[in-house]
Length: 102
Image (tube, rainbow, N blue to C red; front, side, top):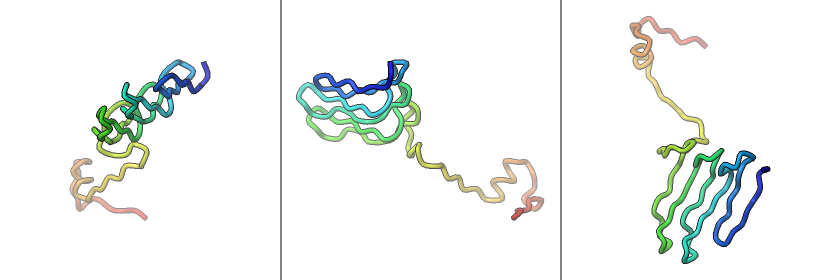
């Protein structure tokens, strides 16, 4: 099965060639209110998602990283700040023995 769009009553579904949820998805409640929207990658929620109550009020908005809920955008590079002391502790050496090369 190639990636295709299937529209049924209140679903917009995208699948990959293995039949896994892949791409943008929206699901609606029986009353027509949006229930959730977001993207799947090979069957796993990934990126920004929103979930709503059946009355249309937002329930949750946030990010998933290949199926795991996270508190950051998985599609943006992570920035890790370390001091020389942090690095020395990780390496198990005295901070005075560290030198920064240009």
